[in-house]
Length: 177
Image 1 (cartoon, rainbow, N blue to C red):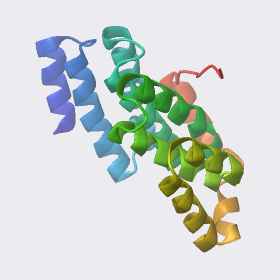
Image 2 (cartoon, rainbow, N blue to C red; image 1 turned 90 degrees about the horizontal axis):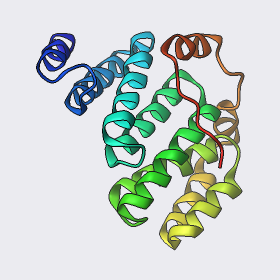
Image 3 (cartoon, rainbow, N blue to C red; image 1 turned 135 degrees about the vertical axis):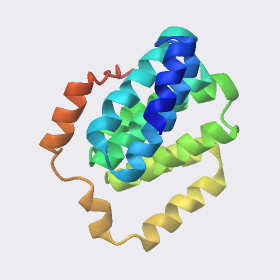
């Protein structure tokens, strides 16, 4: 059903139009819900590339596409590789909306949880301190109730499957800095 809808959008708007990117995002959500990551990766990357090209690298929808790529990485088990995608999304969201906007806060929350899962609680605390005391309290609460094995389990080796899926999809790289 989503694939048919995508074909209609591609025919109506063209393959590089922002509306086509929105249809790709719907298809991406579907693939992620059913666990079809080999199809999700190229759809996610294509949607991001369309948004960057047609809307610009600092557009809110481009920020959302970077965040979706981070979520895809998490779903594939590549926790440490999701970090730069969430950071990129957060930087765009903060610039466009400001740090108090719901989009910025949602991405910040994802990044804080990710850093905790990567065993970087002090970086998470730094992010929390940067914004508000309530977020800092949330980090302390998470650390207090999360068993150590849960924090460490996300630090395992990066899966060969993930590397091959992302390489086949032509995953973009994020420059640190």
